[in-house]
Image 1: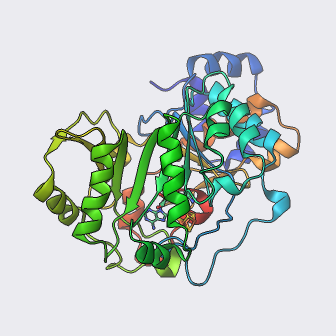
Image 2 (image 1 turned 120 degrees about the horizontal axis):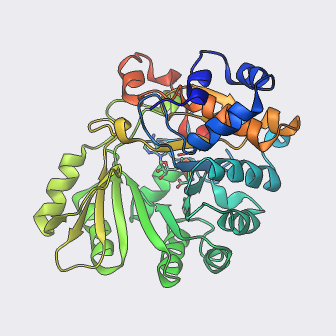
Length: 362
Ligand code: SAM
Ligand code: SF4
């Protein structure tokens, strides 16, 4: 059901113009509508309660499927949101119904204030789960501090357990450090997932080695389809089909399906084992209809979809003194325009024009 406020925001006004318009609104009406429209719902009826915050566009790795050879325009340091600005925006999102936050990047553990950020975010009313996605290169020494600060889980990107192939993919010989971070995270009982992008060259042996980890440890190993979000680095034959990966797994393990609960990953337990296996196929099995995600970039831009350039600047109003309610109204106005990503992708002929995951946060 549309509320008066949603109808008001449904216009094609750019959100900042909507903000100016709202400043002339009858605040009694806005207050009433805000109470009715307590959750962030978009034009397709999707409730957006999961925010991924990119803390930096910098990274110490150069993954072949992420960083294009031409590089990406770096965000200027003064444009990057400071600790208190991230916390303030997160509070506004939480008041609007966001209950799950994931910190990402670039590489989020490059942020010097990462522990303070985690501590601050984990105490925000409404945020029930605070998670992190990392390349793991700096994780080992920080796991205890992050857990104490309130981190609940960590996704570690490991595309290969073979040192040479790992170095060829990431541009860094850091597999040992990453595995050490993984061991520490398991030891600290964080919720741990491994993200493995299925690239051509991934072998049956590597897939079995990764599954062995999930067999022995309470972790989920997820195989991801590679997406065309890397500028000119994208080639249609960059990836390996997940049906091949699954066939290899089933040669050695029995996969027992688990309830999906609108999750992007199709998950399985391994019969006789401790952990799980997941498959994420945004291209061949898009889950746009149940997407609950919003993304905030390191410079305070709200991005509505991985595949679309649709965005709204939250940093400017924040730095110009907008109130929480005004920022909240910009967010509400913007999310109405959240597209169905696969429609955008279907209509894109030149994939190099799509957003780059490195800039908007994976
Ligand atoms: N640096 C951190 C890391 O690698 O985990 C966080 C940022 S990274 C952009 C987040 C996730 O996006 C990683 O799991 C990475 O493997 C994935 N990713 C990056 N480029 C991708 C692409 N073109 N297709 C699919 N996944 C991608
Ligand atoms: Fe860095 Fe993560 Fe991109 Fe690799 S996938 S280059 S680790 S941001």
